[in-house]
Image (cartoon, rainbow, N blue to C red; front, side, top):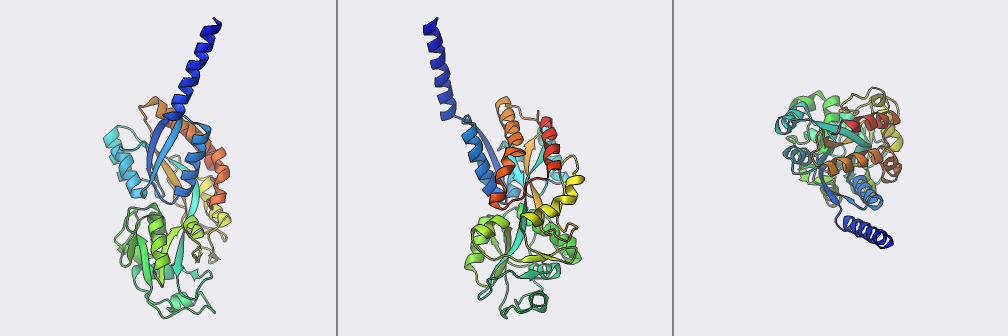
Length: 342
């Protein structure tokens, strides 16, 4: 009996080694906006669960929606919730739905490269809409200079930089502009991809950041962490209460305050141009897109386990990377929604 017990222990040990060497691989793709925190989360979760490994490709929200709909990945990720047409396309293809799980809150910020200007500029909604519509073309235009008294802005041409790929950061940016500018709403509208009136295109938050760093007199939009990590200036934006607010943990959290109390059951919500004196106006949740039906039982339980960890322990590491935590009401609502994954 003793020899059998020793043999059984040995077999179990070999199985454990095998699982660690060949972990269950879960593939995902999508948003670049939350990539820094997702990368950290997936590494930490694998350390805690050696038999589970996540492979996430930071390819943009549009590609994430496309790949999860086509079934080439186990989950997607997007900074803009899937619209009704996209949800229907998924339902038609798979015979079941897809669920949105908010993960963190972040901000899209206006960042720029202007010789001699290193501080934080102020931008009104009129100025941002005018710049990205191609109607405001000089840095010393009164629409910009008027909000930046004492700043020596050059009479240089503005070089607009935007995303070239399907992007949730673009969705957040254009969702905001559509709310504050009727002209933008009618001419361009909102989406992960839009027909830009002007500008150069960069792929991913990384590509836009790189273009801005190497292009004099440029302006673009990136997720807050990319501006901070690359040490490039980013501006304050005038919110709906008339206050110029710079994106940080407190101002992004303030933007979510109203939505947290009235979060819809499907978690699809916009918090751009939120009410509140301290709210940063270009803030957003970002979402994991999880199929409602997952045939592979191993992957299903692994994904559900990760989601439970993400809305609890995982939230403790988000602020170090300049994301805001999920409001408690939202996290609690998500814990219940995880049970919808079957």
